[in-house]
Length: 158
Image (cartoon, rainbow, N blue to C red; front, side, top):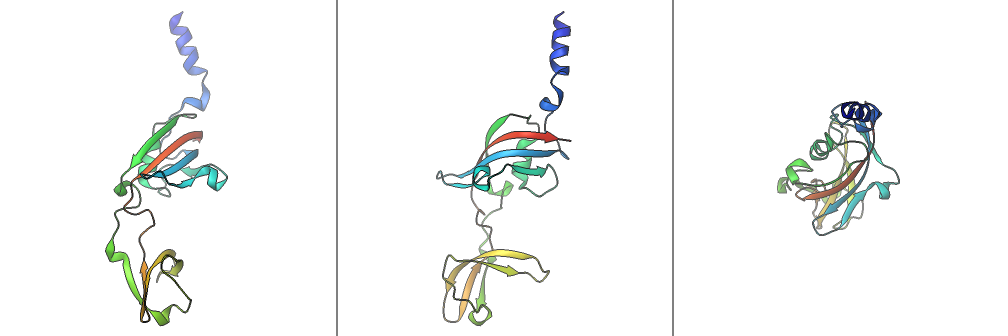
């Protein structure tokens, strides 16, 4: 009788207890926090859960790896080192651009969008401005930072 009850319990759970695997489409509530407690992003801030296909490479690898094996309704908190998130800060990604190449009035801290030779657009941060040049930082704003995530799996679809 116990075997029947245990078997029935597992069979009656449907897809709610299927662990996340590569290829699944998931819906996740999340909050991203820096070591100092600053919330840098959240599904509440975006107004909707994050939806993505696991393993498609559209989300940072550490986040994808952390949800593998989780089940619908499960909550988790985890920490990602820079190598599993946006990489280490790279000083070589700071470039000086002649002042006349950027006709806008810019100030340090301002974000700009540049177009790369392949046509892709990329956000950059103005780090320094002189009369002759503008220094732009092409590092991701979260490069070199440890990220803490609090997540909840809302839905899993194969």
